[in-house]
Amino acid sequence: MTQLSLSRRLRRTPFSAGVEAAGVKAYTVYNHMLLPTVFRSVEEDYRHLKEAVQIWDVSCERQVELRGPDAGRLMQMLTPRDLRGMLPGQCYYVPIVDETGGMLNDPVAVKLAEDRWWISIADSDLLYWVKGIAYGYRLDVLVDEPDVSPLAIQGPRADALAARVFGDGVKDLRFFRFGHFDFQGRDLVVARSGYSKQGGFEIYVEGGDIGMPLWHALMEAGRDLDVHAGCPNLIERIESGLLSYGNDMTDDNTPHECGLGRFCNTHTAIGCVGRDALLRVAQEGPVRQIRPIAIHGAPVPPCDCYWPVLAGDQQVGHISSAAWSPDFNTNVAIGMVRMTHWTAETELDVLTPDGPRAATVQDVFWN
Image 1 (cartoon, rainbow, N blue to C red):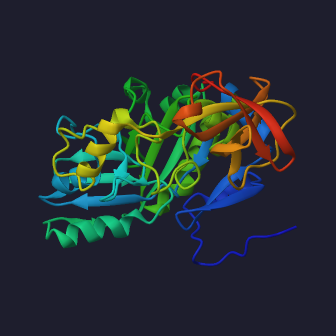
Image 2 (cartoon, rainbow, N blue to C red; image 1 turned 120 degrees about the horizontal axis):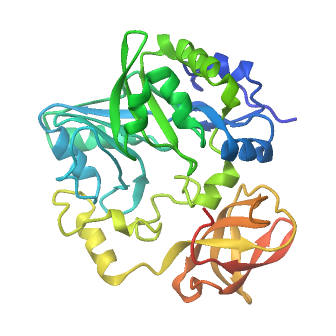
């Protein structure tokens, strides 16, 4: 069996001891850290996530902190989403783009105060781009990676579990809002958010010393709720249309190609470095776009490279993520498809490692 050689370059997390004790079976590397991907099996983890509650070590969602008088200006320079109406206590999903309008990341921006933000990033070295913008424009802002490690509570019983540790007030949080809650005398930011459609929270744990005490407290409080250690689930995220940066999209794609045009207010997001390029894209429209695709037949193998999408002998796109869905009894997939063939119910073929498969473009994602 091929193994991953561990070193200090692959950073452990404040919750690694708990993850290992829970019997993690597989990891991936994400932002130079270990991200669990399987505990029992992908299918068993999927079923449990939909029925109970899980604790996820998502410390790999590193924070880029902006602090200082120009923090808000810098944040707006990074994204085409208009942030003028955003208030402290809110979280926004924000495409981050370069000067060509290409996607650099798709993080959640957390506005702690007018002069302090966290950017909870997907898998890319965004810190260096942000530092470069701040230095190049001589902005009065400190850009750094703080000692903050997110821990997620996900699943239909997440509210009940969170309330047992943080109090009933946590249940009043609205989606993409956060509050400050006490844990053993430490003030923690808790947001109603997460990388699943099953509902839950993300706890921004400042200071690794309380990582395992929090892990143990959640596990103990959730015994009768059937709490398990878990992780972002491949099947559930594809069903839900949750994109994976670096997998489903890269800097070769604009937000419009990724179906994220609704998060681009290019006429009002003054200052965004990619604004001019995206104005042209918004006017002309994308020539390809991410679409949900059902691949027919038996379960497909793991998708670790692009699978060509064909219309006859012509390649019209590619599949970037795919998995068998027990709930929908089909292979669910995320694909980038040319506009000539992206209409729902269009019949195509996907060239998988097992050979060509019939496939159908869907109108919407499954969850």
